[in-house]
Length: 259
Image (tube, rainbow, N blue to C red; front, side, top):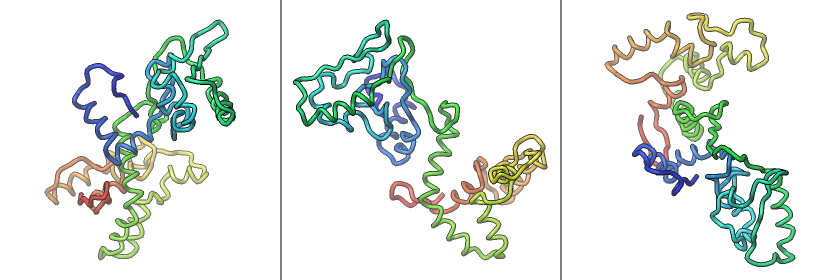
């Protein structure tokens, strides 16, 4: 992801976000959740950006062709024109292609064939963390937490078995943190026919572990009372697993941090 030189004046928040994207593990997680959506070809660099394949750019996939291209660092719309029969590309090379480059060129042309652009509209980012493709801080938070949790939860869950509580409570907690309880959402996921998916307490929201144990307005007073007894303040966790992990040691970029 490289937006340098493509935008005008930037806010402090946007500069900090770009710095995080380039220089942290969490930034790489966010980048993996972004995908270019081609519009008018006015922002995406044809060779250098990963707009056809998220794993690599055309320059990375076809390095010999990139070296002999006369159109490096050019936007998609600069490599063609709109004709009556649609978008027509015009590739310019520094020299004739060698025989050993022909197979690569055929594969390259086949890959970009049919990737037309609009006469109007602008290129933009599509966020894969939401079905709608719209970016939200909530989905970013979830994505980063999932990445951290995947690498650390096994170690953290080992701590669960060391707590001096009855084994049946530890097993219940382990199932809760791993979202293995038979909530109505989980039962439906397992192809069990459920006529009513709503929470049995509030009857307003679909029953899943996060709602049932944390976010239901019938349950939240228990949280507030507990936090008052413990003399703690803060926002409620997004789900039970986050609640457990935030009180455990997590590994982030090689640094052990205690939440």
